[in-house]
Amino acid sequence: MDGAHAQEWARGPGDGTRLDAAALGADLGERATLVQFSSAFCRPCHATRRVLAQVADMVPGVRHIEIDAEDHLALVRSLGILKTPTVLVLDADGRVVRRAAGQPRTADVIAALGEAV
Image (cartoon, rainbow, N blue to C red; front, top):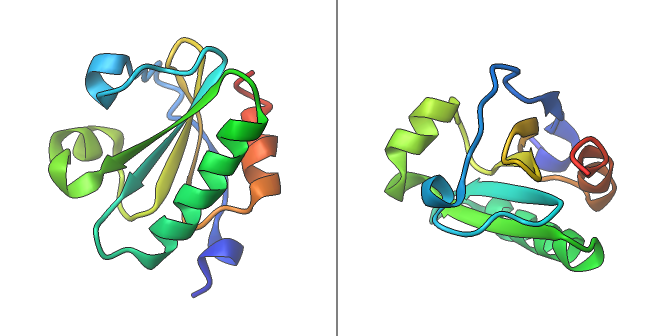
C-alpha cells in the first residue's frame, strides 16, 4: 500500500483532547504544531519527517515535533495511535484539530494546517 495515496485527514477527536509541552517533550508552535508519531524502522516516517519539517519552515509560527511511539506508549495509547507515521495537527492551544496516518503530501499538510491557524 502506498502511504501517500492511502492517507486521509480526519478531524481531531472532538473530545477536547489537548496536548501541552509536558506531554510532548517540546514547546508548541505559536500558531500550530505538527506532531509526528514515528518508529525506528518505519520507512515512510523518514519521508514524513522531511515533509513536515519543510512545511514548518515555510509557515511562520508552525513547529514540527517528532515522537518515538515506542518510547511513549502511554501517550500513543491515550491518543489511539495505531500505526506510524501518524500526524496530529494541533492549534495554538494544543487542541487536536486534524489527524492522519500514512505518509502525507505537502499540499495536504498545508491544507490541514488551515484549520489550526
